[in-house]
Length: 310
Ligand code: FAD
Ligand code: NAP
Image (cartoon, rainbow, N blue to C red; front, side):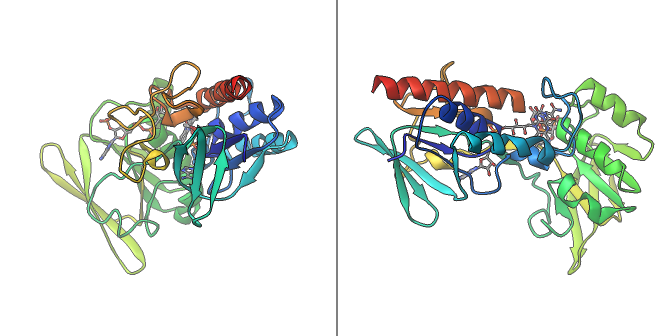
């Protein structure tokens, strides 16, 4: 039986793994369905982690995190977790290959994932002109025109990134005020090949067998505009990934907020003994790498105390 199962290998999961193994736990497995690193690996620019003055892309930034954890004995299983349940003081981790593992304690760090914007053609053309990752797909639009949808930090930062690769970037936002940090808004406004399309929404993305060929935009005053472009990047926020806590009867294993975030105390403890949650998934998360990392460390220290007292 595992001492600790960590679900998710983003900043929260990796930091939990580091503190748990370095803190003396011997049998710790991190279940991460992809390569470790989490959602920040889709970012082109990471510049606000304290102590790391050099600006770098998310993949380069996260690479040493796993290496450091593995040195202290954290094991990574590249498997998707379907469900975490608890019976007689023991957790069962059900995996997508239908096997399961038992654990004395669990830290859930499954983070969040890009939201769908909801326009016509979004699903049909996803991966064929509709993307949620500029670092992954930006290069396909070298010297071409693209659109970016959204008004938060992600949309604006990724629009700036794309402006260096693409001929022109149309930044479409449904209001005329941005949610992003003022310094980022200033940089966007100064960028010569970013054109702001404000008070507008994307109505439809259309195309043919080869992919997107254009998008239809509707302004708040109901006027419309057509852009003949091959790609659109959508950054309209995030949904929490809480599915692993859903039980067979449809109820969650622990207390959740109405929005689907896990309710934890200041030690990242849920209301279920031995179950902790950390990072973007938890209630009132600041949705920052440094905060997720701190949560992971706090949760691991909580697990060590829990196992000692058990
Ligand atoms: P995540 O990073 O979301 O990691 C969760 C992990 O869990 C993922 O790797 C996922 O594959 C895995 N997982 C999920 N479900 C399962 C399952 N069922 N089984 C197994 N594995 C599973 N923050 C900053 O501080 N600075 C920035 O500049 C910044 N830029 C950003 C740019 C972009 C494009 C994005 C999307 C986010 C950015 N953020 C930034 C926010 C930051 O990335 C997040 O706050 C942080 O990654 C949250 O960490 P986490 O560990 O909670 O979750
Ligand atoms: P976000 O802050 O939630 O912003 C989402 C944006 O999309 C908002 O501008 C919103 O408009 C718009 N939107 C939502 N639904 C839409 C729809 N259906 N159609 C069109 N537009 C829609 O999301 P985010 O930018 O991904 O950021 C997520 C979190 O990560 C935030 O906490 C952010 O601060 C953090 N983050 C931080 C950094 C950094 O620190 N440098 C970088 C990236 C992300 P409204 O404004 O009108 O609601």
